[in-house]
Length: 59
Image (tube, rainbow, N blue to C red; front, side, top):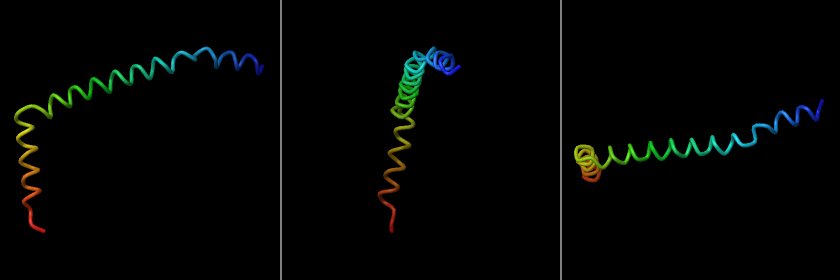
């Protein structure tokens, strides 16, 4: 019984690598979209405005 369970559990040994690969592909795709949004003109100008207001705030 123990041997059969061990054999069943070992069958999916290759799945972990493919899951990591899909996760990395998804993360790279998300990073590319995020980079494109942040570097667009309108978003970049808005971010610069937020930083300028934060730096010029009185404490």
